[in-house]
Structure formats: structure tokens, C-alpha cells
Length: 249
Length: 226
Image (cartoon, rainbow over all chains, first blue to last red; front, side):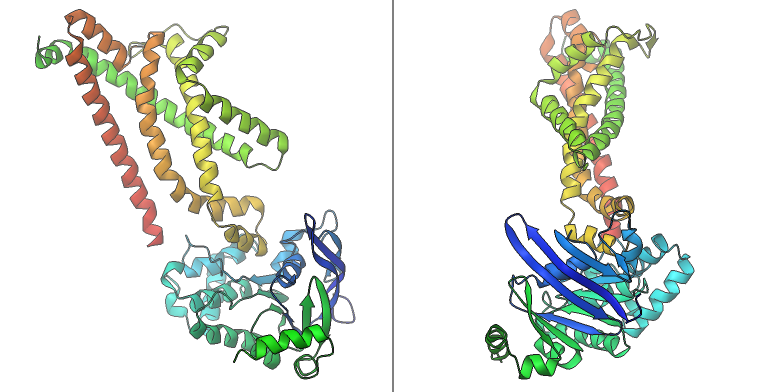
């Protein structure tokens, strides 16, 4: 990590899908301990931006620097870098053929070469924290969406990552399960974890974010504290978006 | 002679033919599966040449009759000095080219089944595994294949059952399988119809047993995802 506390930096990050320009040059710095929440309309490139950070999507141009290393550079040990970037998906993506405990331990055992006892101890401690220790021997198919997503968060945490990336973690959940997932995320934020969260949960953004990025059409139109973005938006596009999403209630 | 008398008089032919059919089927299924896995991996490879080769292999082997393939392999490989010995009254210099042709044919179907099974596993599983820092190989072995096998197995079972029936073409190369010996009984008795009934029943029994075996194996696998 560089001295100024910057954990992730993107410079002119671009991504095209064929003719379509999804990201048109994103420059962002994410500092250690920050909770950066990315909001914006569907199709604005939020998820693509997040997925470029650990190269699940291959950037078309620009660079992503993580802990001082360009993750797109030739010969970079991508798997070693990915260990330090936990990722949580909209569709949970728990491994369906493994028990909850195995879901959480497979990463540390396979990638970090932890012993089974060590990995299971960490897993049980983390499961205890989210109140799901009794589900350790169950298979994912037996869990509710909210439980699955909390397990997915724990699975990423078990690797001891330096940053957590959340890709619309509550968008696939029934409304009554959104709260349990957000509260786990809020706990993590309060612990001082570095987080990048793509979400439509404006309440979460207002309450938990240290910085909010508003994206539209592949660009960051506006960024600032939650107060700046939600109460004093400057861009008309931001105002328009917020009026639509906040008036729903 | 009625069907029972034919069976009593010729049961030795039918049983030895059945033994050959079973042996050839097992060999075909085994090597067809191994070769099929290899072709499937080539088909899913990032290398365009390998992928193209596998595509052509599958297209050709599925697009031509097995009997044609059998003759081509038999005559094409006549430079190989297969042993002239006989094992369980099967002439190896004829049986081995048959096993090769059948395995190659089976592999094409197996490869497509495996490819489809692997691609049916949600891409999110791969993304989750890779985002934990697993390598491509670890992801395939520990995450994708264990889930793909549940898609693949029922179809592979069908392929095995099909193969048992398809082996009957090897009679044309004079390998004494069930259908070849059926011919001996038919011409010996001048009464072919009962012979075909007997053979038909034997094939049916073989396939019922094979099908049962596959479904038991499937049930074992399902235990992990109640």
C-alpha cells in the first residue's frame, strides 16, 4: 500500500463490450477504511466498475492499482491479489455441492493452505457472529436468501481480505430479508473495514457510506459525502435520479 | 424347433456371444469415457486450434454411420500388427479395431454430454471461486466438475445403454458377439425368428441391468445435495 493510505486507485478505467462503451474512463481513489457506496441507474456501469476492480471483467483501457500493484500488468499474480479482495455477489453464488462450513473453509484451505482445523475454527467464529453457527452442516439449498447472502459475506471474510466488494448484495432478496444483510454490512463498516458497495439501498448509502459515487452512462458524475449527494446534489442528473428513487416511499 | 429347444441346443453360443458383447461394451464405455473427457476439455479450451479440432472430431464422428467408421478404422489400421491370438474365443486382431472404432464413436457423444454438463453450471460458481483466488484448475476440479457430474451422469448412462446395443455392428467384422452367434444359431436351425427373440431378450436384460446400475450411482451422488 502506498503512504497516503490509498488501497485501490483506478486511472482512466475503460470497459467496452463490443461497440458498447460501458465505462468511459473512471478515476477513483479508495482509501483504507473507507466505505464507498456506488449508486446510479441500471446500466450505468456500476457493477462493471466493481467487477473490473478484481478483474472479473477485463478492463479495455486504463489501469487498476491495488496495494501499489497494477492488477492488469503482465505477470501479476492475480490469484494472490484476489485473495485480498473479498467479493459478494447479487446471486450469492454459494457452492451448492458443499455444506455451509465447507463453503467457508474451501478458500482458506485451498488458496491460503490453512489446515482444516484452523479454517474451521475461523469459519465457526464468523458463523457465530452472524448467528448461523447451527447451519454449519446444512447445504445452501436449505437456507433462505438472506441467510445465503450472510454466509457469502462470511465466506469472503474468511480469507481475511483487505477490501470487501459488494455487487448489489440485496437486490435478489425478498424485502423482509434485506435488513439482516445490511446490518451485517453495517457492522463490518463500523469495524473500519474498507468496502466498495454497489447498491440501490439509498438508506444504507446515507447511513453507512463515507463517500458516495453517483454513476451515469459509464462515468462518475458526482461524488461526495452522503450529505452532499443526498441533500445538496449539484448535477441535475443526480437530482433527477434521487428524486425518482427517494420518492418511491 | 421351438424357441425353448433352440435355446437349449444353442445356449452355449448365445452365452458366449453375450460374454463378448459385455466385454466389448465395457471396454468401449471405459475408453470412450476417457477419450470423451479429453475431447470435451479440448472443446472447452481457450486455444482455438484445439477447440476447432475437437469440434471437427465431434461433427465427423456424429455425422457418419458407426458401421462406416468401423470399416474405415479396420482397414485404415491394418498396418498395425494386432496379436493374432484369441481371448475368450474372440480374435484380437478383429476385436481390437472394433473396440477402437466404438470407443472413438462413443467419445464424440460423451464429449458433447460433458461439455453441456459443464456449461450448465452457473457462471456465478466460477466467478465466486475465482474471486476467492482459486486457480482455473482448482475451480474446475473442486467447484465445477462435482456439480457438472450430476448433469452429466444421467446422459452418460443413456450413452452406455446405447453403446451396448450399438456393439452389435461388430458382427460384420466377424467378431463373435451376440449377434454373430445369433446368426450361427439361425442358419443352423433354419428358424431365425426365435433366435432374434432370444437375442432381443438378452440385450434387454443387459440394458435393464446397466440402467439400474447407473441409477443407483446417481442416487449416491444426489445424497450430497438434499
